[in-house]
Image 1 (cartoon, chains in turn brown, blue):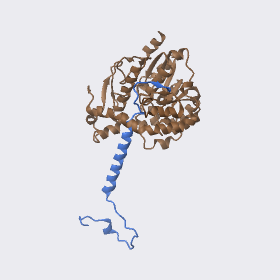
Image 2 (tube, chains in turn red, blue):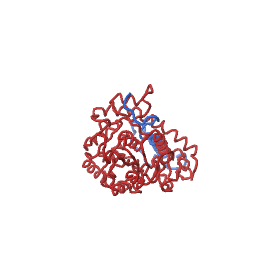
Image 3 (cartoon, helix red, strand yellow):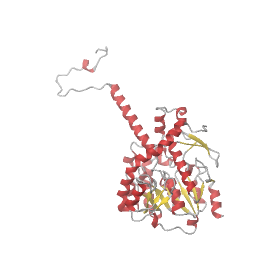
Image 4 (cartoon, one colour):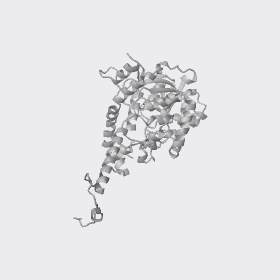
Length: 344
Length: 67
């Protein structure tokens, strides 16, 4: 196990924000402008939850622990009555298990991938030459018979869309907006808070100028945005997170990681484990004692979350029961610990 | 052929002249350009993939709703 980040890992970690920034700046303005006619309601218009729904909430992200720990099933079996906030990648898994989230969030502007989380009417065209989802660990059944599962997901989402409020970023791609409008979601829009609104060339301010929609910091990913939404927008009393792995189980082959090709490229084209080790970093999770590892993008998400968490005054417990997200004053515990804390 | 091997032109004799000369590619040329294109595509996809889902620069505020 490597105990210090290699210089290669650190270099890659520092490159992630630059890569993301250049890729997205024009896209965000374009998407916000294109989506403006659809902005009928925004997160400012959300009814404030009350009773048990205000007292606590669980944010369900799409990390591999959700499946391995059966987190959704355990939430259902506990009879939990608080708010349930799902990231887009975990939404269908919730529905399939019989758990209807109160809210589902989506933010990634990718033109062809994100719509799949809601059932993609153009699945075959969008899947060609794209093995992104082969690296998603949440729904193994999907990989075995993708076309059939996609059709079932479309029907399931169409049937259930009206029961969940869609908290949709103005960066949403056209494919997704078309799909969620067709499915019948009640949509509440928000802008991504991407830089200081007081900077002279602030992109956040430009986005706000387009639609006057409130801005939410994302930390770079939908899981963190879902947590900010739960703690800062809904202002829930106690918030738990599951599936917030920001990494991989120690036994996951490198080839199954999200950014494998980039790491192989950095290793001069080598796919040997010993050549790739320096592009990953390993942790021992304090709740399970298990080994997990991150690549640079997930390490970036982790760092961002922990920075934002220090700015939050809300009560949060990470109940992922695995992964790499721990440190500082962030509580880590098991789901049962959270249920007890809510009852206390 | 100069290298002592038999080429297609040594076996088949045409009875017409083509209007436009045909440039023949060696087998290695095609394979090599394919490798380069594939590597370039992987590189392009990989660079895009390494970015996050969203820009993140602001480290102070969690939300903002105008001044």
